[in-house]
Length: 222
Image 1 (cartoon, rainbow, N blue to C red):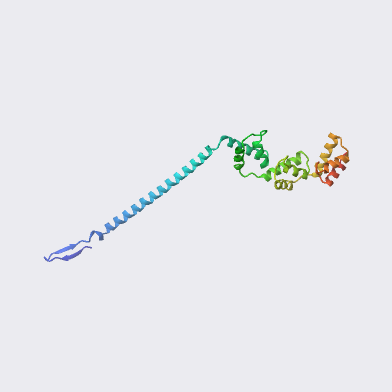
Image 2 (cartoon, rainbow, N blue to C red):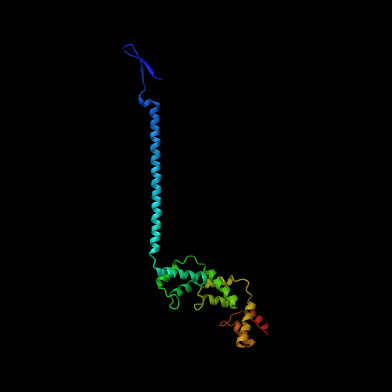
């Protein structure tokens, strides 16, 4: 409420509050501050969003640029490497050699190196195991014979550890039956004697079955 005062002339006057003490003045100040803060926040969010979008676009362009700079020969070599590793269960060394071999794919060394480097996570143990299963079921090879074939430089070229993993994880193989099938093959196709067949079945330069497996085979020959 306004304050009344008496002047020197004897009259009564109403003394008004200064504008800065008025309610409407401070309400206006508060509105201005709130609006200003809101405007600054929106500007900051917009700036951050714009910066994020620019970074994303830059990263995408960089990725596309890198891909476009890869020679087509390198890409072709990588596709072949993936095919050999995934579809044919080849070893790492065998894939690499196949890419550069003149009787193979004939890629350059650099193209092959790029392919092997970018091949990804191949489970070479699994490839070795798949090869081992094939030798056991399709060729009636002995456990030792399979292991040697997997790691041989003239065979599959897996590492010793990979070959060992493969034969250790072979399951459900009847080695006696495999030895017998080999014995029958020698008898029928080469007309070998039982003694000669036994020697061939156990020889380190032959089939490499155990003596017990060879005995089983010979005893079941007709």
